[in-house]
Image (cartoon, rainbow, N blue to C red):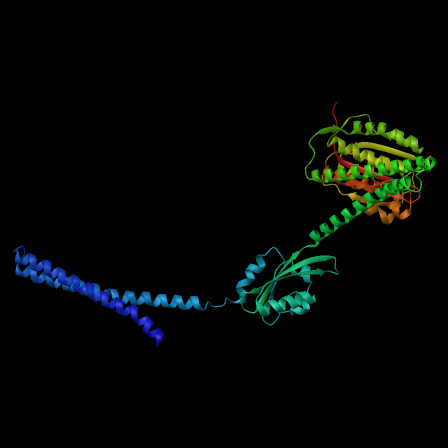
Amino acid sequence: MDDGLQEDAPEKDFVWQRRKDFFVLTTGAAAVLTLLFVTNAIGLVEWITGGVVMIAGSLAYFVGSVPYYDKANLVETEATVEEQTPPEPPIDVLVPFLKALPFPAVLVDTDKRIHATNEGVLNVFGSNAKPGALASAVFRNPDLLAATDRVAETGAAERVEIPLKGDTETWIAHIHAAAGTGSVTVVMEELTAVRRAEQARADFLANASHELRTPLTAISGFIETMRGPAKDDKAAWDGFISIIAEQTERMKRLVADLLSLSRIEFREHRPPSTTVDFSALIQHAALSLAPLANDRGVDLSFAGPDVSLNVVADEDEITQVIQNLASNAIKYTSKGGTVQVTFGHADTMAEAALASGRQMPDSKRAILVAPRASSRVPAVWMRVTDSGEGIPAQHLPRLGERFYRVDESRGGKIEGTGLGLAIVKHIMVRHRGGLSVESIEGEGAGFGMWMPGTVQES
Ligand code: ADP
């Protein structure tokens, strides 16, 4: 009843207003006509004709405007009703959006069955993830299932992080109510790489602090001894001081390697731009490594063509590659052994990989860096072969991981940071080159590196 009254009121006002307009118009026009007639401006015939035309016109104005008002009223009423209770969109409206998503996504209907999926879902949930399948048979993960049920019930969106594929992958499921129909959308986003990077960063920090703490503990321990129990035992001091000096050297090496690694990582995505002579870099390295080889009683030899080899490279970084590989070979070869550094050029990267790669029959081999440069471009290569104790096959693929040392497991005493090969790997990635290793345990190891480069025309 109330509604009826409220709706009638404006219509009444409107009709009354129209009536007033009608009377004002007709009275005004009649007055003007009469004035003209009285002042003899028009005759009786014109007065009557004008009166008829004027009454017909204002009548038409009055009658004609009322239906328009009604129509406007009607449309307004429909719009109000529409606003109050919007119709629910059918679930299928969501399907094209689901298909267009760049993430694997699933639409679950009110019966808790898969209504639609998109590309990528099979890869995440397996071949069961097809329309019609029960969500519980597809999702499997109890947290994901429980969250899907809650969202269908409450309509409040949720995010759940879940492990998939036997814990090898981490995904986050974004679950939303689908248009108030009681169905839900589940959009999957992969976090594996992010979580791995976080883990690697945490491991790196833990390893770096551990590696730094070990020599520091030794240094502070000896200082305490010299201040306390051995305060007056000056004869023992020499020994303590040489250990402190050794540990300080170790710390210095570690800090230098850490800094060098972080600098190289920072520049890794900026390719080098200077042209340098690869042969000259190897000859310089030969000179600087001779004292180390002498100290260790290792026979170090260099052999390569007597030509200049042009490479677009960072001079310091390539020098570091040569030095790290050759000094490792010297370090891990016992007295009386040999280390040979050979180098050369090839028409293609593929040929350079072969020249620097497999040369030991029946060896175990691993590619530590796969080159990013085309296998058809001309290249230069270097190989460092030693007659040391070699590297067991299971360690080969892991060489170059930060702080990874085979000698730790062998219980060896050779000084090292476990960062040298990690630095070499990063440099080779930056130079679009490759790095390989082969070894026969007990017979020695051979490291090969190759990268784009040409013989300099004379
Ligand atoms: P480190 O500072 O320990 O030498 P690297 O990253 O240079 O660190 O090398 C990692 C590990 O690889 C070494 O600890 C060593 O066990 C092994 N390795 C590297 N080069 C050789 C080699 N020529 N012969 C035998 N083992 C090697």
